[in-house]
Length: 175
Image (cartoon, rainbow, N blue to C red; front, top):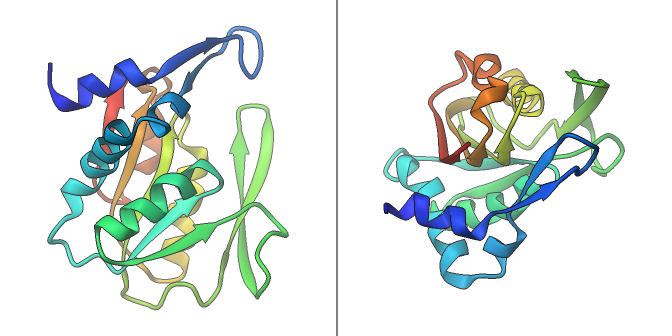
């Protein structure tokens, strides 16, 4: 069994969460396991070592968990993308579609300088809407997207298709 596959034993399935018919991939058991957490961060960071990354941009809220750890592993800064009204200074906002409606995300207008090299991170790639919005925010601030990394990908939802053209996509665990 390879290292990534060994992490699957630390992911728990929660049936009918957040609504009936959904099986939620809960990674909180991985977070409480020191070696599992370290390995997950390492495997998420490895494709971007030596790529002169300036910033890791993480999506609220679970992207913050891995984002700050990745920033430390890659010796760079961290920038949060948040839900509306959570950032204190001037922001730029972007709306995106969800399977059941729409939502918005925001980033500080001064958080990325033109040309800075950015890796985007979240815990999970499902339909791709949130990460697509994050990529558009980074691109709008003229950041250079080096790549996208996530712990888990639900391949059957085809979220990758929304991320075409934003850079290489790396996921550690694929279901």
